[in-house]
Length: 271
Ligand SMILES: C[S@@+](CC[C@H](N)C(=O)[O-])C[C@H]1O[C@@H](n2cnc3c(N)ncnc32)[C@H](O)[C@@H]1O
Image (tube, rainbow, N blue to C red; front, side, top):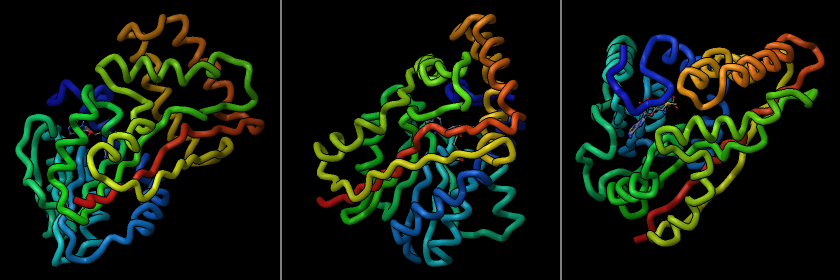
């Protein structure tokens, strides 16, 4: 199934399963971020690029019956999954917008809280994307971004093809205009648009062969290194060497894996 040509990692059950596993590994990081933000009952929230809505559902519990959470998502497949989960769990304070943010109409000066996790680094015009969202935020509202600054990823012991993975990943995102360093531009965009930078916090996970974080990375590289070769980002030989180095480490008790850095960014709309 493919109903969103723009999402480079694909719209299918394998990717949905990967996103679900990803949520299980990173949920604590996002929950801590939300605790620091102090999300309030009654808030109106927008979850941009919600995917299958794992965070949408968490947010809906945090804002309670008097609040509302709108999931904005271009993939009908992911949105239908979320609608069905909300029906099964009797979650009633969610709404849905189907489409790419660039193409849909969203309310002006409406939301108390706008969130996006692993979305803005994919989009071809991220500054424009962010500015559209800022228009939709109420005065006094908060915008929160959780996304990569794709540095720090490392597989120990070092010395193999995987040492170059960060450059390879940047080329993968660039293929459709994404920027894995966009989070470094956010503070200056906030400053130009009257948004106070409340938090800018790097987070990383690390673990050995039994950790969730290495399995999270495995689910990605085991599928996507070949897709990168198919899309001519790297040669078949490079993909084979990267995968060989990855698999050599994956089940080795000597291995320690570090995730790339994710940045938790919060901005407050002051006027
Ligand atoms: C890596 S997934 C993250 C899903 C979810 N935010 C999470 O953390 O589990 C990226 C999501 O962004 C969505 N997306 C991609 N481009 C988008 C755009 N231009 N506007 C809105 N959503 C977009 C994709 O369809 C996909 O569901």
